[in-house]
Image (cartoon, rainbow over all chains, first blue to last red; front, side):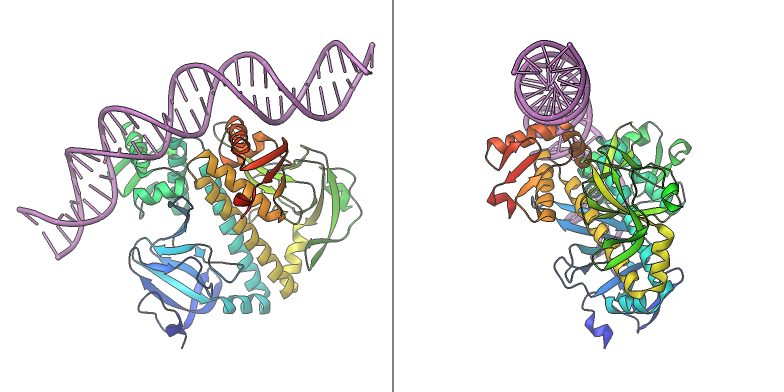
Length: 214
Length: 214
DNA sequence: CGAGCGTTTGAACAGCGTCAAAACAAGTGG
DNA sequence: CCACTTGTTTTGACGCTGTTCAAACGCTCG
């Protein structure tokens, strides 16, 4: 049965309709992943599509120089794992313990062909991912560390619609996302706190002051 | 009539079916743009979708520090100008004299809802754009200039399926695409030529040696 | 309480950005 | 055909910013 075919992850619930996006329910399962547990690996066959229910996920690629680049952070409501070809071009792992909705790719394609509204929804989802990726490119385009980190915090705040930003990911993750070292990220955050651009009640929580939150 | 509503560009052909992608023809017009002519501007209403027939296009965003980031280069066969919201989040301009197929957005959405195959094609197009953007993020993730420029040349060669790469864009464009200055791009290319990684018959043409083309 | 991991901070170095000038290419008009 | 203009590309010198290497600090959990 389906739940057996999904090798990774643990304790899948039985197949039923899972909500991939508001107004788009597809047959799939909900699975739980531990922190740092791999969801799928590079070069594996891409038979499933995923939606974050709770927690946080990172998609990464190993670079030629041995470093890893984080292609994206995926938060509740985001989908990931779309692929044109048969193989994965990135690997994905849970950052914190996460609940993930898993839908068979063929089920998605089936729905897209049958149901015009579903096709529209899927297209809108892909466009949303496109926009998020475009914003990521803009972040990386900034030449200095301060602008990148500030933009990163802004984006998180905007996606969460809150000036209080929880950082599920480590400094190293943020660095690999922004093309910086973890030390530079740490230093920049400390400096922001020193000049009162942000408050840092703990290392994994940031509060943006009004001027930045805008 | 439609051709009047499209303000920018010149000499639009009458409305007919234009090929947006292999196997996807939609009602639209073909237009010609001069080098550096704007196709659409930031914050304008996003009523059209575009496909490059010939030439080359850049999509850009003005950054807070006054610099501009190039979000993507669009070559023949690429589509651009997809938008979820009503307004453009980037501006687009022709790099060289270009022929562009222009399709009304409502026509695209109409086709997507009616025709399952068209919806599939559109989804595939969006996924393709996603993949190109992901590769762009990977480029920008590299910490040194040499790796970024090398990756850039590799991508162009791969998209063109040729070791001979024509660069329609200026050094400044490449810099804004890679998050580098035009001087660094120029220096890096010169260095590549010096150590015979590439040959540069002219400033706008690069030939990759076998070891790099792979 | 101690072990282990993530974070912070420091000091020295290297690479890229900045500023500036020269070389080059392409087009214009005498 | 050549002098002149304009825009792009190349190259040089210098300073700053982020990386690198290293050590100390502070959580969290056994």
